[in-house]
Image 1: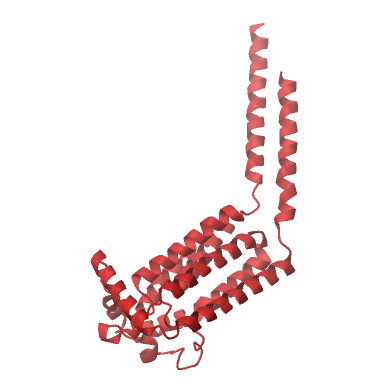
Image 2 (image 1 turned 180 degrees about the horizontal axis):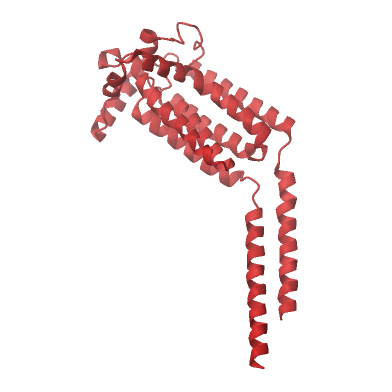
Length: 287
């Protein structure tokens, strides 16, 4: 009986090791292919973003009307005014300037740095990361097209302050943001991308310091409101898209991970062997 169980366990363990080792090598993408796919993904998203910007460029009337409706909707939910939160920060010029710089300098550069990091160190997770980025951003662009929305900073008679134009740095005055879509407040892809980076880092790394990356989406959420670039609802929808994109991508393109199943088989075999030995001892004693 013990010999049969031992043979079965060895067979199951060997088969499990074969299944665990075989797909790992196949699933890890090559460096060149990953680099090209990342470049193509970002390039395609930029082309689509530019096309949406062109289509919605003359939608100021709809964008302003949508802003009024959104503010009324938020009021009906009892949400506090973004202008009230902004007033808490305005007395501290250094803090407001810092928020402006964070908004300007962390969105696209942080995503590029993250993709380069993943390309070199976590390439096995790149398919899921890329799919989540493409999926969530495309849905966001569809919303930009269907629901053009003026940001709070454009509603100066509603109590909002355009912090970039007053405190600086102003990306529009500097000519940095000429290609930006100013009527695309919904959803906040600043928040969406920041949360996507955080979700990926927490998932694919094991260091206890990885949780610090959650500060990025939290700070970004505060920054986009303080700078009057987004509403509360923009923040919520952006975060929801990132979470949904990451979750769906995990089913479509899961990372290699057959090892846990292997460990389960080995543990089961150890337990079975131990039970078999105990049974033999009991038989011997009874005789």
